Image 1 (cartoon, rainbow over the protein chains, first blue to last red):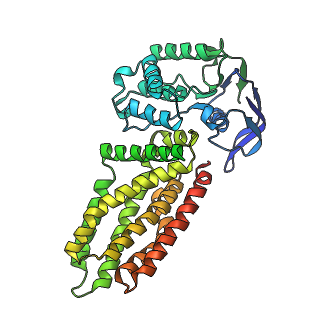
Image 2 (cartoon, each protein chain N blue to C red; image 1 turned 90 degrees about the vertical axis):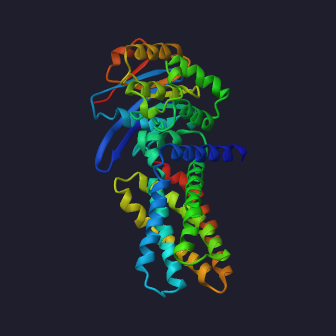
Image 3 (cartoon, chains in turn cyan, green; image 1 turned 45 degrees about the horizontal axis):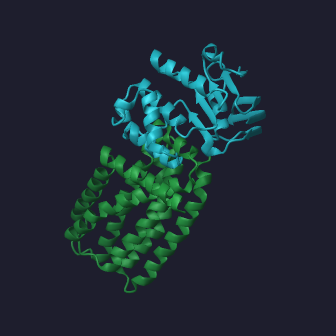
Length: 194
Length: 213
């Protein structure tokens, strides 16, 4: 599903990724770990199609619309409500039975009661839950998740654990985390960036 | 094509909704254009004539549009929403067209107030002058939205946008003033229509490359 050979990325004179090789088959679960500044986010942005490599080769099987991406930022409009944000993305992603899917995700991530509140009024943890709903909304084939447990409370983290466990094997995951032990039971591949 | 237009409508509607909620852009544009007219009303010497007043109208309109354009991608900068839009499977030019349509609505809404105010402070506008404004709006929004998207990625966007936009807006000012004061406004209106068509096609076709990293 994703194959990289000698993948490099530079920002100006700064080399962020130096010759990364990876193979992630369909249904695989790759956990990327490494210290701050090791290039985890850059690698995920490359694999999501949000950045172009400076060198090496990168082949990504699913097309743009079949990738679900969770980044450091929420990718949500602060002055729209939770429902309006998901409805916007649902329309752009042509999600079938959009309203039902949105309602199901908001309920599953514990945001149904806050569906008509603006994102600007949400706590950081609620924003992260909504960002996860957005990433899962179109039932993507490849999920690229950058520090998905950030800001989640115990209940939110357990919800995400369950969601990942349910989908692992059916969907392909590329997850960057500072806590690889948490995802160890699900991981089929590991990549440690230095 | 239906799906493309639906995406454009979805994105433009979202911008109108955001503006109705936050009221970040329209009040600032309206205040700017009206205060500019007031200052010019007192700054312009008596008997300066129609030509000078038309020039002042276009100074006010271009800088008011610049104010709106500078804020046009602000909601997408916050929260990294631009990444979300770029990842969506819709044609990326729809992002540009939706934003340009929303900016056009803002600009027309301002002009609905600004043009009668201009007539009150200076002199009434004839049909050709209004047609010139309408045609120039399309060019301003097409080019300005594209350049604002390019500038939005930069930390010095407030500086870069005027530097990029104002030179490209000069033909629109020439066409707009010409359509208002020339005895043959048709030539200028045709020029504006041609500018709109050429630059709209260029922006539509190149937006994909602008947003790729």
